[in-house]
Amino acid sequence: MKKSKQIAFCGMLAALSLALMFLGSVIYAFTYVAPLFCSVIMLIICDVIGKRNALITFIAVSIISIVFLPDKECALTYAFFFGYYVIIKDYLERIKPRFLCFLTKLAIYNIGIISSQLLLIYVFGIPLDNPFGKWGIAVLIMLANTIFIVYELMLSRVTKLYDIKYKNKVRRLLR
Image (cartoon, rainbow, N blue to C red; front, side, top):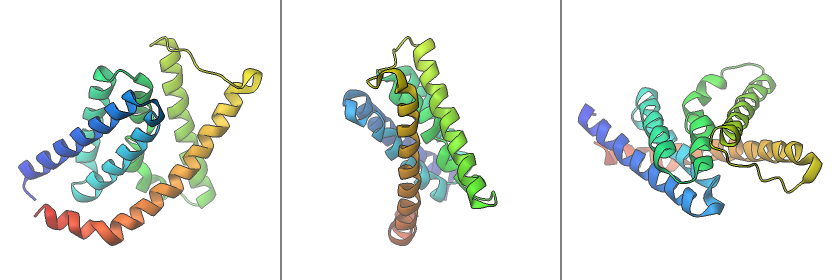
């Protein structure tokens, strides 16, 4: 594929990611869902164009979304985990045994999400909503880890679906 076609493809998918991120900023329920969908877009870029261009697209979408989106939580959730996770997932899955691989993924997720929340609180001055009282932080971390487990299962199934059903169609479209 020509370089100009690769850049155009990455630009279009970056614009789609930004549109989804904006939707996540406008509709509160999509604050965490939009970065998840954007990670699937990154999966397509990794497969069709390559990890290098996917990394460049991730950096561009992260910077633009942090600067321009009104909801910084959505943008930071993407920038600190969901945007780059698909790019590094293959490298992480080389870790043996599988339990250690899972713990590494979980640690990276927790570091990313906790870092983004700390940045929101201490840099952007956005208070943490804590409806659970004294044990609120522990409950929120447990819920976030549950979301990661569901996300990991969803991502592996979406990857298989993409490989089986859509991979050839996307590649044929880009010839």
